[in-house]
Length: 388
Length: 185
Image 1 (cartoon, one colour):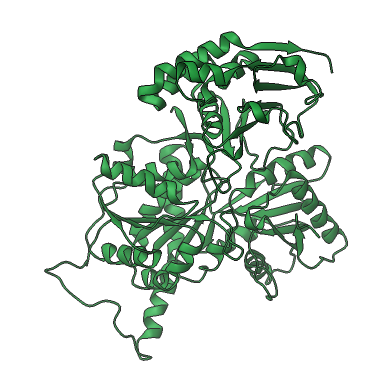
Image 2 (cartoon, chains in turn green, cyan):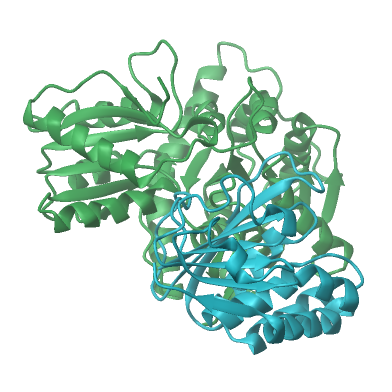
């Protein structure tokens, strides 16, 4: 199929249009804005038959999405950084009320100082909101994952966040193969209207859940995201088969015989692969592991992928100030804790606030991972690319 | 892999030029990335944009530090401090200027090809405003052959609608009026 040049944001806008959403409620914020700008254009010129609700804040955007989802509408929103933070309390309601919706979160650093560039602090701060979190590493993956996200969200009745790195993916033009609109409509037909709010079926939602009930209701949401693993595997396999792709919960590059690897998430994966290939030519058995499904975390799959490794460097593009380690590192360490033979883990934080992670930075991290593994003594978290 | 850095001022269309070139390359069946160094955007301020071109899938996501080609859309930026930073030895430079290529050897000592075109004059005469991106694209295609003029023109027709023909004529004239100097470095 022919490829077109699109930015990551436009790729998502096309996916949302082809998914034939019913309601979009959003508030513009850089670097997300061009997604909803494009969608409002589609609605205005009649290419997309949807209600576009202009709201006065992200808190209202997410609230409108929850309400719209309750009526059975297919719902989309997009945000970044402060916008996501402003949605915080409503995010927990969206997951616990089991309202399907898809949100593109164009990852951007949190203030202060004010910074419009990329890191992962915004999504990491919403780690525990009960949303499925998917991460992409190209505009093509942003497009495909958005399509899969609608199916996944409606099957699991959980909200899904599609994360893509601000500017690095959102504003980079690159080849994207768009699926024919009719094919997408067949892939995700209109949303089934089950047990939804309407003037004829009025009922109360989000009412008080006292100690006698809250725990069980919360557990249902916890159980739902646990069980969503099955849906993710099935939907991904089905999408790969139908459209000739090769998506997975965890990607592994060169991991068949790797001794040292970096673990990445999002756009940094590509550069890490380039450096791993260079290092392989120099004789180092280097590999890259990349997490696509951050929530629910692919524990079993990850354990399989890192089997036999001597050293694993975990790259966080966010930090947990004052914590024992950073968000991704904590998860990896938790996954591997119960194993008898496990790789030495080295923690890295890099690329905060849009600081470029250069190829030299990746080389530094591979080297430090090897040193930590060979000495069986990891260093405290290394801040790579930080001026001293 | 070919890496291009674009220097311009807000409003001259450097970011658009980077995107159009990438789109042309993608339309011709190869791989490309176009991105900009985003910041507080304002008309007249110096801006940087980048295009990466390859015959195979591009995995790299880091910035471009050592471009093969430097393109300057504004005549006052052609000798700006730092304009030649990182240019590869034997690299190519495409400049919007009314001066001959020889006058830029000291600014770009590592360049083996220096091309000049008076893009501002051509743009003002044909389009009616000093938006130099389509003229400089014509010059870049002449110097590097990185995409076909026809592919660019198709994109202009789709993208610029009422201004399509003027931009096509601008690029064609710039293609014809580009002066190229080659030298051993």
